[in-house]
Length: 267
Image (cartoon, rainbow, N blue to C red):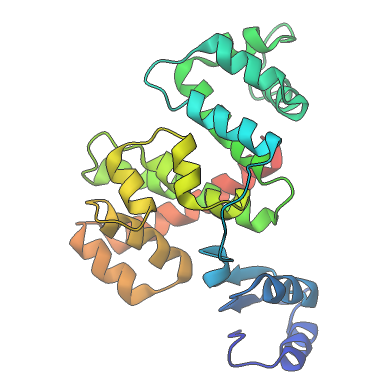
């Protein structure tokens, strides 16, 4: 339902009539936090709109201590060479992160013969690639723990979508997973994007596109936003420009959504 073309009374009545047990309704053109909260309370299950791309104008302010810790984690795993001791200390400094890490590795998915009790052992078991990946996910979830879960989910979907399509486009050394993940970090942390990027080392092309500057990644970034907002004409045009099939784009986005739901509930 288009919230711009439907009164709140009519929207609520429609959800009550068609929603529970029959249909899962999507609220379209959600542009403010108030509209998101109201439509969620009304019973909508899916949401789409400008709120999830740039919910509010952010002014410069001090970064809260716990948010700064999560940025430090993202910084640590974005370095060319990992400093395992530094990462270990950062993880130990966040009790919830320690818990998530040990629970993750002691889950049935790994099936280790003996339990893993220390952060150092856990990091050595994961290996470099998985350490980078897991810390990024856990730090993003931690940074957004006081925010709408839908906002954090959107960041995870963007990251995975970019990662899935990265082998099909030219992107040099740019880390597209990190680009997607950081694209909503200003909103999650409630600080301006330049301030986010001052604290996380990222390649020039990704940094430029996240700041709205000229970048060779701009068409791909626009494709991500178009797919997210359901602008199918733009998706078709950008997919053609990037030599991607619309089926691949759609399938990748669907896979990214399934993955993000799984990660956000179990990471």
